[in-house]
Image (cartoon, rainbow, N blue to C red; front, side):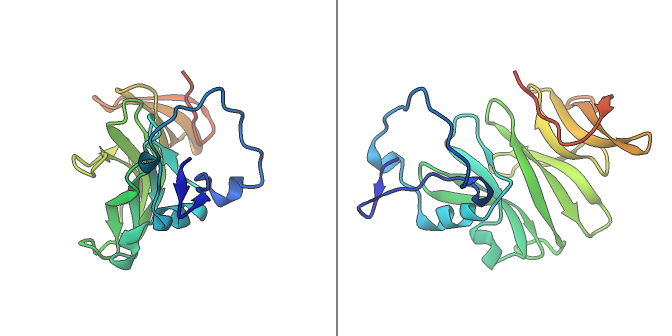
Length: 193
């Protein structure tokens, strides 16, 4: 990365990963120095977050918290790593929302146009999956109540953890029709191309 105040910038890794060796990189694209600086506040916030999601192009990061916590009790934010800015896309307990709760486990659609996260609120909806545009617009609930931890398997399919036969199951959800297909018992799905 570029330099910040004369010293090398630190990579943005969650605190829980810092004692692990960094993966080998086959190549690094050179970018102008000003395009790689990140504000210290964004870097500091990401140091303690253990559930972040990088956008497919690596320019943005979804994380719990952010500058909005001075306005709301909790929030989910999108940080623009290139610009060093952030924007809250979901608020809890203030900032226009009287609902207590939090948003966690963000995931990006492969085209970078949508982001999803698990929402926990104390207003009777408890746990659910929320999907929105990157700026927070066009928000909607995906799946059913108590679904969580969704990842995308294309633009029309989500794979999430759902209740089925009294257990947690990895379940495919058609994002257009809402049709559900239980795949196998388990939780926290991962999709690979």
